Image (cartoon, rainbow, N blue to C red; front, side):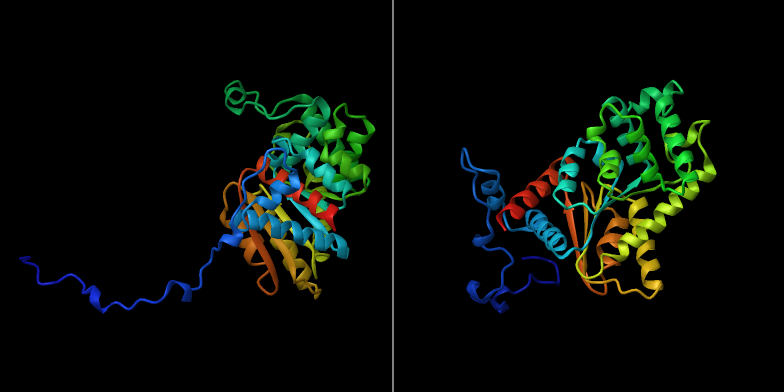
Length: 319
């Protein structure tokens, strides 16, 4: 006999109900199918579960297709990691298919893209380079990007257009892999949003501070004009930027709405291997609070973006 004054809860008082009367969130109709040997990409995509992340990619692809067919913009915000994981060919293909209306980058994105265009490689070993006092000190990277910004600012250009123009003029050996160059050649706007002191090109003696700030501010205003077009069915994807681009996007939202323009009923998405606070709030929740949809897709860029690209290719071909 227990000495405790409290007795175990009497389970005979519990009320149950028939299982079939309960509303459930998962049904076998949403389950995935095993991939058959020799099956097509379309078969594989169709076989993914209609649940959580897989359904999120499907929903996002359908939103992009609707936007493209309705003439609404599809804006891509890209962190540097997206570029250095080898996804530029996927995004360039999506440019040609009409699924990229404009691109926003942080400063790291420009650096990786420029180095790839120049020598076909990027991403230094920070630990070893830092120990030698050599981190970020590659001459061509700093000199070339800073020169592009200085020359472009003199023509009233933002950073994205300036660097794209320079890559075009020097006939970069690996320019076929450069988002900046390929977007420039296709007249697709690229805006660059820098944090002074955060990028290696700011440590070079060739850095033009005034021109960098002015050109980035021009890109900010250009991006705000692009964001204004999201109203009524556009799509914004934040891919791999945890702080800079979500903050810039939110400020563009308030610029548009403060001017009196309508901006609602659009889709936002955050694609990253971790759902950070700012993308969750500034991309997925706050901008679409008065009408729209936010889609969170968690996973590695090098897996998620090719899946999304394949979905767009297969879905657009079917309809």
